[in-house]
Length: 119
Image (tube, rainbow, N blue to C red; front, side, top):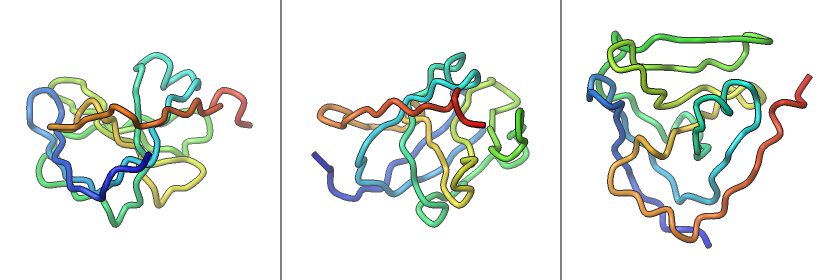
């Protein structure tokens, strides 16, 4: 069940990083790579044109590993992971839905992504 396209506001825990994302929540993703397993993130994939950083560029810090293609962003103040730029589709972001305000995830399918098996 797809929801109507809506703009959601999101932030890290301390509010230093704030952003907006437009999505109809087609599905959520849980990944089993070493990074996603440890942070237990539930993500929605959006094209970069559907995402806007409103504040906090200076508060972001970046972490890369393995192929150094995916770009994982964290707030350097509170440590929360709000989003990452995807490895296979770098013009898309994975948004941590737990950072979005007023979001109803009921009825949104969750897909298990197999990141651990990626070469």
